Length: 340
Image (tube, rainbow, N blue to C red; front, top):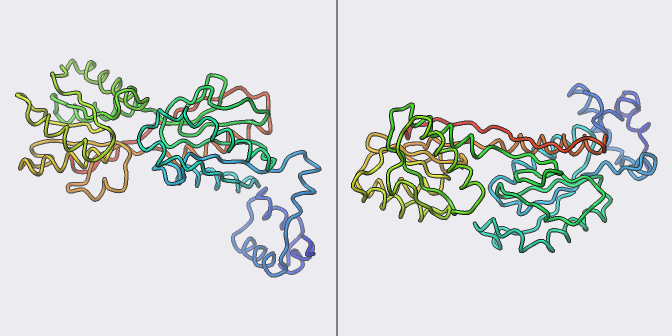
């Protein structure tokens, strides 16, 4: 079995340098790192993580439990987690709950899968992970969804209880900023196509929109608030309804980019031009937003940053179990394109 000394001799470096490369404990030049990695591959060296775990009482492994790896924000969040953990010498074990089709866009029904979630937690715990990061597909409260556990738990892209550490983004502030952006561009009649009425993002974004309108002392006209289901078709249908009002809006705030795309469809079939006849904004900065004509002004979510911060928090809790729970809300940014 190859040793660290074998790697060091072949790479022409010290064993300490090899250790830094393997464990990510010190920044090593790219050239030296590449030499060490080539030597590791050549001699087929495998770090003795078992012995290290026995000495430290830790496995330097974090379990990441995702609702579904295909969910819109999940890949970027997981990428941020993995990159941050690896820099600190941690490994990641991923477990996918495969809830995309089961939840579809009814994300508030997550409680129905409590047993499935806790089975996933137990599987990760059986792998002796030092802590678990739970990654949601949709920002919402996950109060009391988990059985008690002795290992640290951090929520990413979702909320826990006041006793939990979680990292997510601000629905309220983002919607308020986006509405103010429309007002600053001269719009006073601003309609909203919201998501499901009782979903957490809908209620928070609606509150942000209403606050911005109140700040500007602008009325919200009858019929200007309508609800879709986060899908393209509902954006199309609700926009047709808005255009049929006696006093149609001059701007439409669709609460996600898919509904905004449906809005584009309805405006096009009505012979209206964006942004000349109607301004449109979305939310999420999905790939479709840049390809719509004209490209869509929308809100970009800090998904990678959420993953980075979740990894940092789980490592902080592991190194200092008495640290107080952290509730971190990361601001979003407006991506200003050509639809306003």
